[in-house]
Image (cartoon, rainbow, N blue to C red; front, side):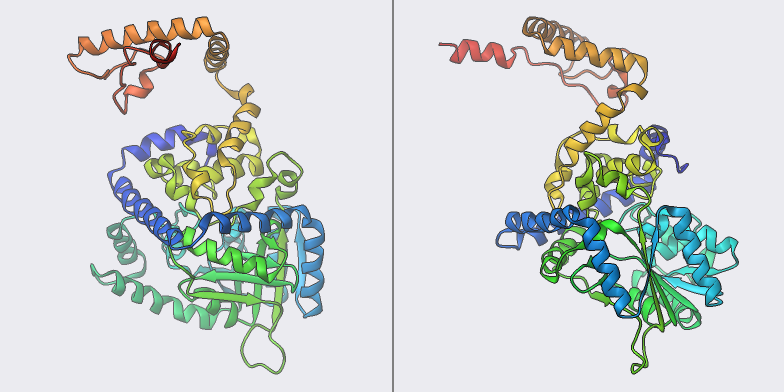
Length: 469
């Protein structure tokens, strides 16, 4: 699939015909969503905790400039070097400058979506620097020369059988059908990389303003090895990751793992406030934090600022019927699913990802799953409004006609009665209670599913008959 958000329709059509992908998505999204429901259900008052988490993120966004300055001051005081990056190019330049300064030849990196966003690995490869992904899923994607498809689970689009094939082909793993043995083989390959690395890199799940702390959560331990073994640690963090206090962090760290993987708590919570003191034998001698904007300030100044409250748990992806059907690669972007359908157009330019806001049924499952209650459906509707001008002429005319008819009760009722008569007639011609083929331009619906005919009596008619008096 091509990495272009505007090719969503073509990519989605290919995804629907991919049997292996459908198998992987059925397993992955069902399991992840089911575990989230169970984990959140264990809380005495999940709704109150969600609102508390939402409040923490919105307060941080309200005071974002001041919070970021506070983070910079606290980190600098402890010996860290804070760099600001306006865009992806500047962020890559900062990393390359650090690599040249410390004569870096080999590096390791824990999972980080923001480094995917700035296309860091190709830039390092071009500069002759070997950067190895250490998250197991990201490592599989790297050796396969492909892309992650999920914010939390990079290889949700792959079956175990496909992963086994990649590992046998790319890194010489002997045949095994045991997932534990496959993991141990990857662990053995990666352990040497930690020891050889001149530099370790991470992202950041949270920036805690009151102490100037970068927090990285993970389950595999790779983040701790990537940041603790090499002599230099570089953290690239989006400016929206800041939260005011440790109390806010305690709220959010209860919501993040429950929403992302169905865990009460992640296995590792790693906190960094600066390089290791001279009195400690372990830890990096140099610590750099790159605070990345790359379009976030534009979002902050727009009607879509709430999108920056996202804590990147992936819950909306797992709950979304569209993502469940076509997977993350169809979106042609680092950020996929419902939140990606908002963030990608805002970061890349709305016209450059105009297909994504329409890749939703607006069922509201994303908002129900979101641990900080982001109103994703409303923002998708707002983006659709903003993108009316790029829609095909027939769609624009059709929607205007639809809006006109729905604004006039007589037209609406007459149209409903005519549609009911036509639909029931079409169903009777097939000898069933459904329509398996609609005429253009509605045939897109029946290419994938049957169309149920309209009821013989509308709700308005039923109301008049039964409740009119």
